[in-house]
Image (cartoon, rainbow, N blue to C red):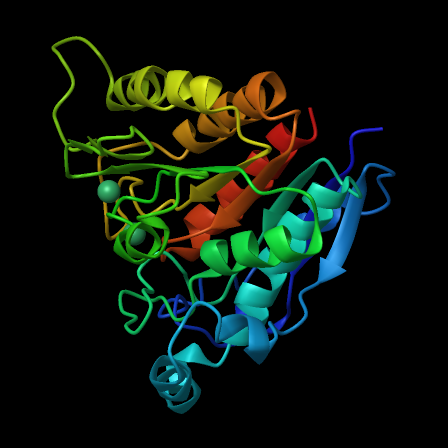
Length: 284
Ligand SMILES: [Zn+2]
Ligand SMILES: [Zn+2]
């Protein structure tokens, strides 16, 4: 059976960097539809171990995160992502959806900003390599903004493919670090949703296929949704479609192994509408 793990912690709904508007206020209640399913495993996110954090970030960053009240959820946020990727790597589950209270992709070695505290994805990669046989990862970032922290931390690593949909255009010499400008207007007659999906299919999928990762990590933010703070004019229904694309990409090119990590997005109504639909796609 294809099992899907849902990684959540109650603090994510109460206080966090990304809850200016308490975006996860309707969770975990909004997950009730998945209760009792044999193919769904619920996990309560553990705090990330400081020893692991210090392999990625400086002691100064750790101190600053500790002192920042908006980072109160940072430890459980990163801990959930680390566990999610490890469980997928071990084959305990095939796919994972990791909720977070504080984001990750704007956290570099010694800085953090933009609702982020610890770099959850890079911590998960480092942990996974130390504790499992998995070492080759593709990270597709469809949060509206450039994943500067992730890019900095994986810059010299040929075993991480990082394809980031943002406002840049870039391909590294070895082809493993890529920015795709997702801000351009679609051609006449093409909807923004269709344009965005086609861009992801054209720019990310062949790269993932050629790279042959052991796990696909999808850094998923809904801040690019119309009406949210990174709006690219996308509708809420784009995101489940995108989840379908990622699921198929993982099935075809990463042995099915897919970890979805929640990123940006601020509106509660959008979280409540989009996230369960994304999870439903993972259950197909
Ligand atoms: Zn963002
Ligand atoms: Zn980028």
